[in-house]
Each structure stands twice: as structure tokens, then as C-alpha cells.
Length: 129
Ligand code: SF4
Ligand code: FES
Image (cartoon, rainbow, N blue to C red; front, side, top):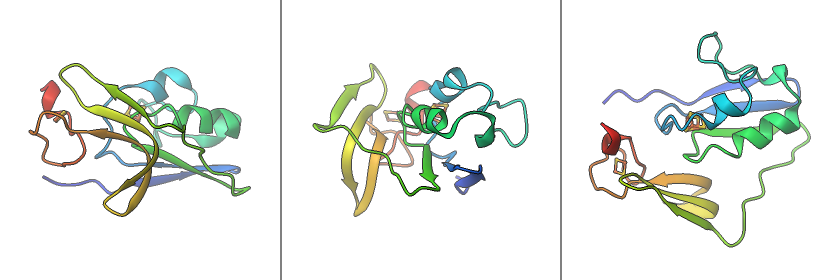
């Protein structure tokens, strides 16, 4: 499988990073801020098309962790405590919290629950194909 590299989209107050390998097409971003996240335009993420706080808030809704952000003022995402666990029927297990995954810090991940993913521990949507 050819893996796409994560891409960064710079705005004046916020940079949004997108890892297409982790995107499970939940569309939270498209619904949340269509002016910023629009797959019909290039680049598909325009961080300056909304207030940086709003962009950060929508990025934090991305359940798979495909989207991340860094702020110019250095503020970071504060994960919920305790960790939230959501089991998607016939799909992944979503974790949202202060996570350590193979020595990597994460706040949002979608873990494969079916065993069929080629990108374990992450779900790769094989469950929905
Ligand atoms: S919210 Fe995350 S998983 Fe959903 S479509 Fe956007 S980037 Fe992909
Ligand atoms: S749960 Fe989605 S590929 Fe396994």
C-alpha cells in the first residue's frame, strides 16, 4: 500500500496537519467548518478562512486523529481526562484522551477492532468496505 505523507496547511495563527492515512471520512471537519475544509478546492484546508479558535475546535472533533494543529501562541490541545472510549458498531474503537501509543503521544485515535486493518493499530476502513 502506498502511504501518503502527512501534509501541513499554514495559516497566520494556526497550522493544520492532515494525515490522509488516518482519515476515516467521518466528515466532522467538512460539516464543522465548510469554509475551511472543502474537498472541492485546492488546497482543501484553508486555515485562514475562519477564526483560529474555531479551526482548532473543529480539528479536535476529528475522531481518527487524522487532523492536528499547532498554534502560533504555543497553546496545545488539552485531552479529556478520563479518556473517552467509543465503540463504533462494526467499526473501530475511538479513544480520546492523553494517550501513549508505541511511545508516540496521541490525543485521538481510531483503533482497529476487527483485525483486518493493514495499518494496525489504526483502523484503515477495511471494516466498511
Ligand atoms: S474529521 Fe478527520 S476523519 Fe473525519 S473526514 Fe475530517 S479528517 Fe477525516
Ligand atoms: S475496525 Fe476498521 S479496519 Fe478493523
